[in-house]
Amino acid sequence: MRAEIIKLRQKINSTFMYVTHDQTEAMTLGDRIVIMKDGEIQQIGTPQEVFDQPVNQFVAGFIGMPQMNFYSGKLIITDSGRYAVKVGDAVIEVSEEKQQNLKQRNTQPQDITVGVRPEHISLNGKESAMIEGTIDVSEMMGSSVHLHINTLGRDSIIIVPTLELKGRSLSIGSTIRFTFGEDVIHMFDTDGLNLEYK
Image (cartoon, rainbow, N blue to C red; front, side, top):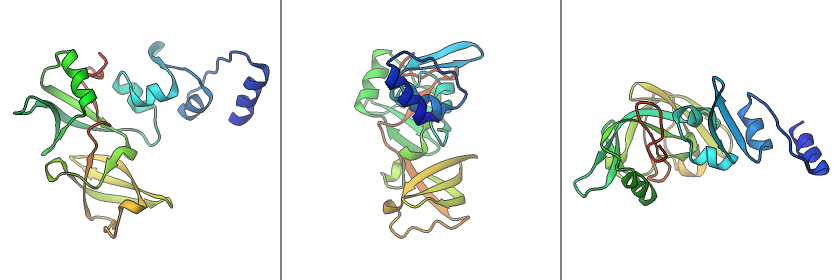
């Protein structure tokens, strides 16, 4: 049905307004998406914009399947004067673009919620940036494995390409270590606002 609606819109070359609670429909059908909560607009943008640059934690959690993982953390400034996030014992310096966004807003160190999409988590990284978890469920999906893990007292989902596994044990109950790239971290303040865009 989604394909038929897309074809119909192209055929009559007219603006459509489509209301849905299904974020997959919104992402695949919309040129621009208006995300609402309790009757209030949260964000307006292209599907890619709202996926890559969610303005708040609600949008971040609503867009994307499986849902974004959220961790309690801290935004810190390292001895070298650069921003980094601390999740558990792991310290991950954020990308240069994120450094600039935070500096422009004179963002101060604070307690934050760190958001990372399941497909942006890696099993390879610096030792100081690794987080440990226990595998609860392992779902083989062909080109990737969906790992449901318990880490830092909460459940997370990690999507790992099978090529990245290289003989690692993924049995239930085994320990796994993971990290996230410096350019895919989302940082939300205690009000749920994205520190890069508020």
